[in-house]
Image (cartoon, rainbow over all chains, first blue to last red; front, top):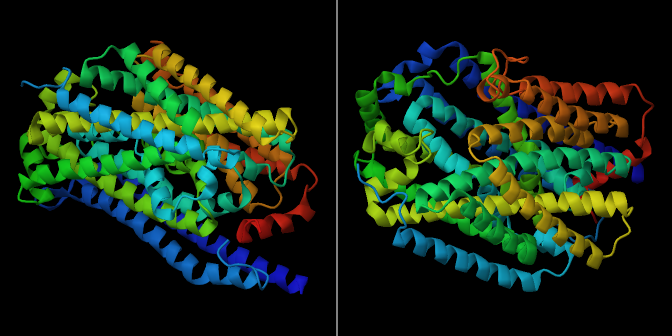
Length: 98
Length: 509
């Protein structure tokens, strides 16, 4: 019983670690992609995509949107899968949510 | 142009007095509920996700970002936006790596988590050095900002303004603890988000509610360069280094991390970061509008004539679109913002001094509630005096730079040890301790050798270290030191790791 609980916990821990690392890497790629463009390709970011809107400003706003989106993906995943797995691991009879 | 800025303004003073009265009322209410250390440090762990989201946003959206970034955008256009973006991207990292484990493993400070399965004394001492270094630099930035701001907004002398901030903040923290500090943050966050939204709506109303028409007008007046990267980022390495510090530093700020202990459980902590990320992202998107709005409606010359750094762009814009009443309101909001952030910093510093150093190091975890609360309050008074002294001593320093340094220390001293303690089984006491000390001291030394100190302040010919922000060197260094020192030693606390991992995911039962 204890062994199966431990191995299930290992599986939950590994799944959470995979999600956390993937989303962290995604956020870093998006943000440092933007910073490196600012540092190395200024003319490209100055290109106008519409009157009054440069590519750089559009990408800057999109980095903020990407941060929202990745955060939302994590909350969705955790609410749907992680919480259920944790509830399954808590001993029966325990009040859920604490 | 003529302006009421810098003169005693009836609406500013009235708004400010209403805020002070309201926040002291909250403090009196909170003081009656503050009976234990759980109340004093963690607001009884009864804050909801939405409330904590607002309080986190309140702690994070300092006057430096409201006034500083709006001014930066107004004066340099696109370059200011680099900061707007950089200050948000740390929040998803807090969510993915830190928030839930922190809530499940700790009680009051982030050192609780690092020390959980390692030896208490060396970890607590090293973590306290890092935490206090971050808090000191952040306090300098806020107090210096407060002194300048209040002098410009209300015409009060710098030193008097610093003392007022110190004394009012002391009242919140000393009597109301985390309950009062949290509610002051919530009120301030609502005022700041509301005020910035109102300003943005009034600006956009002049451009048919089309932001692109505003940006096009800015580029017509000041050239297409305002929409493109310019002079601010000249050295790519420096840009990446600052970016790293901003991104990873957020997850190492003691006063932010402490907020996760005020909610009942890890799921609430998670949801609260979601709200905080939404509010903070929205706020930084608004700075696009406010900065370009000030550039077009007020004009760069008028803004720099009040403050060369552009810090008065947002208050001037408020006067430009809403007259003296709106100027008064925005000035009071800016003051409230500083008070609230300083209170949050002081409380986290008091937790470090009393919970980490006094209770766990000096008293070996044998101190009753009464003694813990008394020590926490003494620490609060000491920190308030320190913050007033720092504010006076560092008069005239560049505020945004000090905030950048606080983030660099947080990212190098606190973040690597915290993340490795949560996710890396093989971390040893000596590894974590060496990492925190190497992170703190390498950052301080490289800052002292940087062009900002050597060339700009000491007026030397050249600097020993080429980068203004040391993050790209010190953050990897702290990780490497932790891993190398840990691997050179026998594994430690392996049998405790199963218990640690259960607690990390399942919480305290």
